[in-house]
Image 1 (cartoon, rainbow, N blue to C red):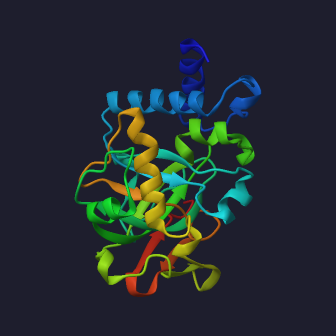
Image 2: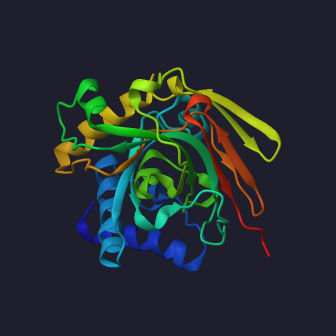
Length: 263
């Protein structure tokens, strides 16, 4: 894609939130676009968000579980940026008006204590860099109408990033088996899904390694203090005003997201 087309596509996505209306899939307007082009579109938006006062506070790996790839109709992971304005306090009402088509998914969040600079990052490197983990709920959102996304669309849309709620109980990696960690996802009193950390590329730590080695050649490091969301332990579920969502992760603790009522 030419630079002008990249800027045009980024602007269309930015206007989707300004207008409160999702747009048609970008791949329909730019049929020749590939994954590299999609990341250029994503980076253009991140540049504009930073110019507007946002700060990069971490990254997310999306589509890292078979359940999510099947649900979204794609066959590979992707990544996006977590901006400062995306973080919401646990149990504090989250307005849904700022989202277009929000869904929620449970994840084990990494908080880094050291820098990871790929390529060449190993599992041992990643474990050494993690300070602690937290239970988390990610709010994913799509600016593409009806979630009709190709891999190009979701990457360009900042990997469908919408928001993050972090739990408050830190756990060191030495205290937990990430692959075996369990999750029960509830809406109110109803259990809607169960999952394990092993659903995420075999273990969430593998997603962290994948991320570091994918963005490293682009000149991007994972910095101390950054939050990394490695991917969902279950499929994603639609959220609506008034919903209360809890992810109970056993020895990792739990995290709750409360969505404000429509009123």
